[in-house]
Length: 125
Image (cartoon, rainbow, N blue to C red):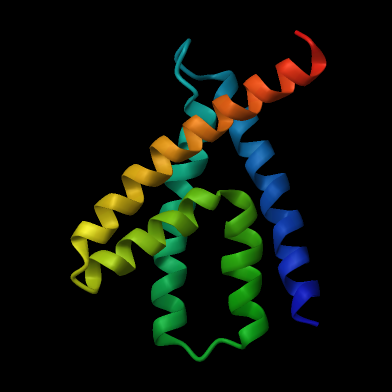
């Protein structure tokens, strides 16, 4: 049953990401991806608020997963990443947090470039 709640939240989060990113993106400064930037910042703020709500309220497990893994996870995975960094910092593990941030940023951009290169090579372009 938990899969239903995660999937429902994920569907809603993905639709909201598309709507907000395209709406904001149309009015953005040329060259800067303001739509996705806005989604990431908003998603992180919402994840912070949900983190506190989960901490303070006795929310049912299904609702917690609906909000975090489903809705906000599909809205922006950057919010989950940011929560993990925050928790590492709160735990006093700043070196691990910084390493995680750097590895994620550089690793993901390099992985994307590798994927583009591999796909172009396979397709002969």
